[in-house]
Length: 245
Image (tube, rainbow, N blue to C red):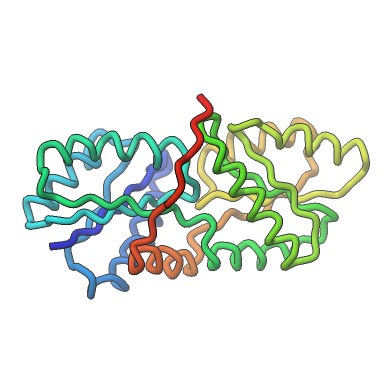
């Protein structure tokens, strides 16, 4: 029997966790024909960990775990943390088939959400700012590819930058300020959590307090379509990722 396991990061803001649970609840309604056995595991909680929830699903009869990372990009959580926790399950329950699906940040529906936001921005340039990672090369490459597609669709200059990887956002934004180029930051995040509100905005407004921000993806219903599509097709990555650190 198949089971779908949604793996989320979790937020320090309870309201955001409720919104995320609601989003997943809507996804489960579209995938009931695949299986009624579906649950949520958290990366940043002591309870309802991947191990705990996986065992709960197996105890209910699951022999195949379809693991859907509720994360935009393939970085440390998707490529290291989730497989590491599932390795214990694979060893303990060798008869259980485990499939980790791809992230959803580059799906067509997500690009459509970003296009709609960009078309409402009057600035000369859009700063597409993602979380980023120091550990793998592919997320930055994926972000650049997304920015190029968005630029073709909208005719606007889209700068792909990250906060944590090479920290390219600072130089790009500072250079635009020196040149007098108007810019708006589009946070490429699922929701506006503490990272965006307390760190990213503070860091950018230290350069120029007048730089505007758009809302992030903010649980747009098209996210449901993109994730449902991945689950139905059981889409997985077919590449070997390049470890940097």
